[in-house]
Amino acid sequence: MGANPLLALLCESARGRFPGRQDRLVILPPPPGRAMAIVGLPGRHIIASSAAAGWIDDHLPADDLMAPLSPRFIAQLGAEIDRCDDGVDVLLAAPGLGGGPALAEIAPADHPRAVRARAHRDEVRTFTDASGAATVILGRGLGHRLEVGAEVLFFAGPRATT
Image (cartoon, rainbow, N blue to C red; front, top):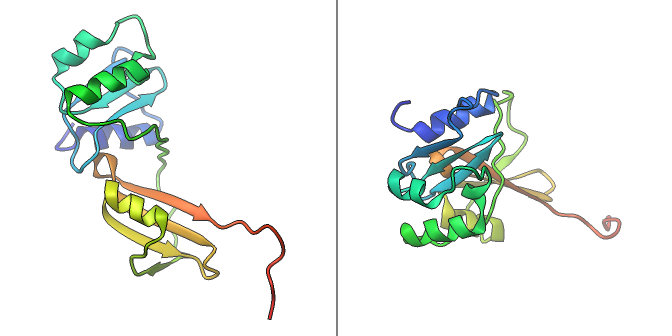
């Protein structure tokens, strides 16, 4: 699978090519970067962490497809690898669409989303649209893949005009 097997599996999954049905659980070494993860895919899971495969097998019941994402297992795994659960997140992946950017990069800011991204990701960059109402954060996260976070300001009433 190459130097980054998690990245290879995520890229294949983004193209609709999931691990085989016989691979209901794929255990991988920790990916590059800071993150380790349990990834749920249709009918299967990927666990990319520093835990030994034998430890994982010993702590997951073979007949429970949802066990890798259960709070009990996540807590046990966290204790085993000396990490705390940082929350459940969604990972959406698709091939790029191409085209030019509609956003402009801005200097790193103290925007709460950018601060959080820098705590959990590498190579963080911040962008905004021309109105300043949308902030987009890019950074290298799980499997050292490029990840995006977005925030759009909503206004309670009409904007003041001058």
